[in-house]
View 1: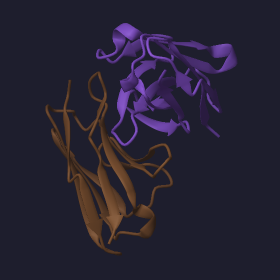
View 2: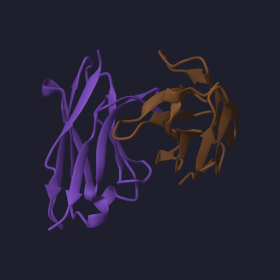
View 3: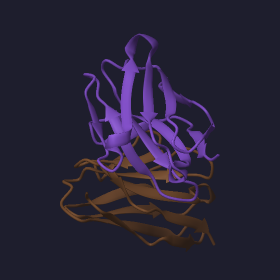
View 4: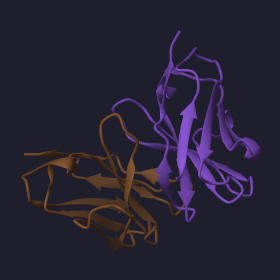
Length: 107
Length: 117
């Protein structure tokens, strides 16, 4: 199985701060990488797919980058509504696997 | 407007079989694929399996021997059956549409399943 190593496990950011979350795959996943935000008690919401494509309706302060085995999610200007858990997903090879998650809080 | 909604029993006894239904609207199962994903309390997400638009299935090898996914296209429903449940199967179970064969864009609200006697 492809292992997705996500870091950091938790992050505290100030209003307006730019933050990054990383996911490293155990093998090349050819940009088949998505990012999700999950708020407490809710289902995950798709933010980014194909490594760098912004899902419709997602604010432009979210962006994704990377290739091969290294990927990152950037939030340019932390907002209060950005608090939550963030997960990466690799959809390159079965079984699809998720990163362990990053808990993002507003400082 | 695409919607998915999971339903099923909230409590299942150990060693019993779990049966869940995902009812979809705003999309056709003959041209869309649906996956099941679960999340134990306070933990990360685990992909369970997928039923493709052509009716074929793929499963996570970790649970393949216990899992079956099927559908009724006329009722717009996808079914999950998993046998030999144990306490570690306690989780929120989600169904989600698969897009481009590699990510999930629409998710249901989830159904919490507790395995306990």
